[in-house]
Image (cartoon, rainbow, N blue to C red; front, side):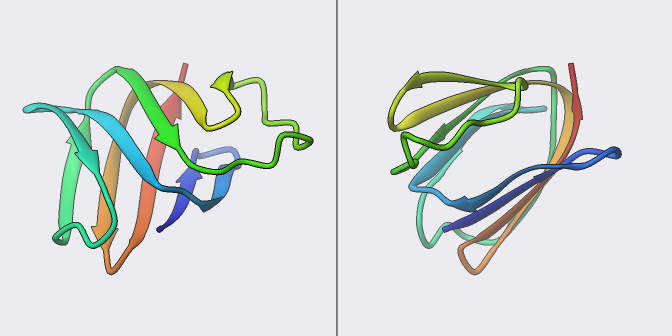
Length: 94
């Protein structure tokens, strides 16, 4: 799946991932490959991204790297759209 995380100021992340977990306004949920199309609002909390990330790549200060396959991003609010294995997350970062 391809993920883009976009804030009003900049693109925070773009690349291939295996899964993403977000704090949806009606409860947390996870998106895996071939997920049904969805648009949802996101509340404040942690966004967890799993994938095969390049260990030599530095990620912006917004991300905490838990291990070589997990990134965590704190979000204050946002919207997520999933369609045909493409995910766009519009965010207000902390």
